[in-house]
Amino acid sequence: MSQDSEPLPDLTRLTFIEIGLPVVKRIYPRQTLCFSSRLHTGGSDETSRALVASFEPFGGLRAALRRPDIAAVICHPTMFAPWDWRWFARSLFNRRFFRHGLPIASSWGPQFLRGQTAAPIAVVDLEDLPVINRCNLFLLDRSLVYFKRELPTDHWRVFLKTGHHGVPTPRYRRVRRNRARIDKLLPISLGLPHEALANLPKPQEKSVDIFFAGRVDDSASLRRRGLEELRALKDRGVTLDIPEATLPMAEFYRRAAAAWLVWSPEGFGWDCFRHYEAAICGSVPLISNPVIERYRPLRDGEHAIYYDVEPGGLTQAVLAALADRPRLAMIALAAKAHVEAHHTPGAIVDYLLRTTLHRAGLIAAHRDR
Image (tube, rainbow, N blue to C red; front, side, top):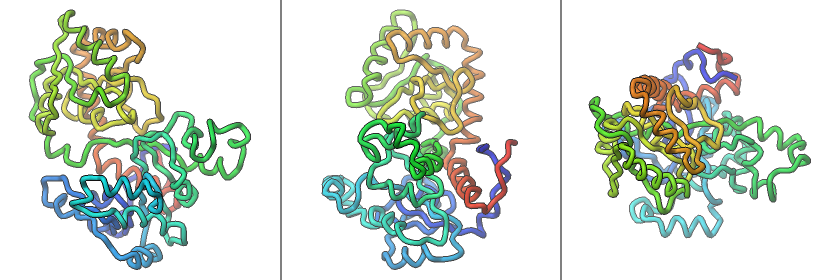
């Protein structure tokens, strides 16, 4: 199935329900009923400040799910079931508890999807985990489509230690119910943060070769090894900008824009904001080779530079890239255009909505432009 289509029908005539994070709500605030018990802000514009995800009585959610005018239900899965002791521990000892209280509606809301709903259900899993937690397998069964950010290249591995005790066996893969589950899985990207477009820098002259700001010691092991390689490149004339302190978003973007390459290695998940932030700032993302299936991927040599994680792989990729700076400039232009077209918050929401509506038979089949 192609990932492009004719424009969506007039969304002002459609109504959506969203349970959990206000991803769709931020883009289509008037058309989306958002059921969440936490306050979600972050944007500097009036629309973002107005997007206060509201706590609604559970009776309101139950009634909304039965409404015939709802076009789709968008659900964000939880890490734990709300009756799991780990849910209480994680919620009570989270600093956000003192500002927002327990996330009752966000956690219990998905459980209402066990019953009948009038509209198709789409699940949007943006977590770092490459598996679907056991408590969310019912959502996979109830959904029409299940979008997963960290989708393994072998989709069956989403059941590792959750739906199956190990790597799913051939017998498990032959079960009709399990094959139907696999058919629902589609990739989705984190894309840009919602606040990104309001913080973009002016075009910058390139003043350094490589910029990186991120966690190292408590993140993916390949980051520590990669950082050692980058620092060794200083002896070969490569200039680095690697701040030790956390940067405000606007400053992060300004310094990213001033670099030819922005190092964006795998972290807790492979897909991360930095891939797309580097591109939108006019730099070239320097990314460790992918370990997941991607949505509208940044392609090697076209939108990004990829490197092998084995010793020497990062060094080789950096030196080869910097040897042809006019080519890097062309890649940066293509990367920025690609992210603007496919990885802004609005573009991602339109992708998940039109895919869901198409699978529900509510819009025409997708076609390439």
